[in-house]
Image 1 (cartoon, chains in turn green, purple):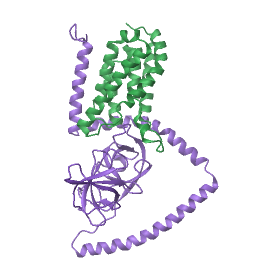
Image 2 (cartoon, each protein chain N blue to C red; image 1 turned 180 degrees about the horizontal axis):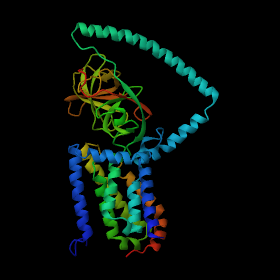
Image 3 (cartoon, rainbow over the protein chains, first blue to last red; image 1 turned 45 degrees about the horizontal axis):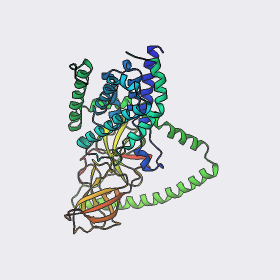
Image 4 (tube, rainbow over the protein chains, first blue to last red; image 1 turned 60 degrees about the horizontal axis):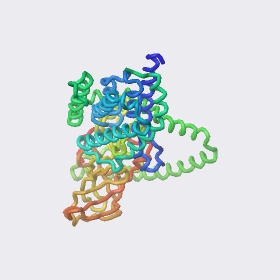
Length: 164
Length: 277
């Protein structure tokens, strides 16, 4: 694939993840389903960090975090820091991660999802007095499952982009 | 290891960005300095919010298009009856308001004025389930300001937290950050109803054990604190029980506003502290 079309693909995926992040269930859906909301944006970022690390620079990812901050009403900078940290870790260990089996890769991603959730809730608790959600693990579980299912796609993409 | 060969350029960059994030987080949670940045991004995010809301808008449109004639006639009948009842109540209220204002004048108090309202539609909700906020489709351009009280058809809904040009964010009364000065209708007992982070529960937790309050009592805004006008319904007492240390009573209140269902809400266009309670 040519670089500019890759750039467009990254932009479109990120925008789609923002829409999914903002979308909500109908009012008739039971409340527990709301707890299962996956980390759509982090999923998209981790996907591209592994598939095409050159396209995601840290400042870009950090700036992108601002949009999620505003949508979530989080303190500005929180999601940027989380995204930048996750991108750094993934790109730093991408060569090792690519040799892992899909299950092991998902386990590594799960650690990042859980860390992101934990940091987010911690900062929200300290700065906004938000109570901790009783189901801290739920978004991690759903995000990891989605990661596993989209793994095939990543693997195919990876073969096209054996980036240095 | 991560820093075995000295820090790389990327590691330095990450450290720098994290540091800026930390400064931003502290600034943003303790002051309103970054509010303009937030407003600009909020405007940019409007299409995203609209896109996310579009399935519901489409479903609404289709529902309207294919509704049957009989169903529509039924609805018109119901609305006409409701309208009749409401206009009778309004007439009664007009008389009562005049009488009340005359009495207030006799007592030397300022007469109460009617509050100007603006009808707004909820176009988005915050994706985090413990944060109870909604986005409405009216903003600074329509006269909405920070601190304006928001109602739905059943009772108090929340207050305006942030305003951008064409939209605003409303903090709901059940958000854990929200406190609302209230009083009981039966005896005027005052307290503060705090949000709990649960959509169907408020809690008053500063009343003494001997306070005269019981399940079924109606709770209204007391007007103290100068954000919410006096007298709007807040909810009904569900249960009264002693707190863990037996120093205070914990009163659970069920909000009367349809916090998770309302589509249209009313913004009361009155500035904070404009009228004495």
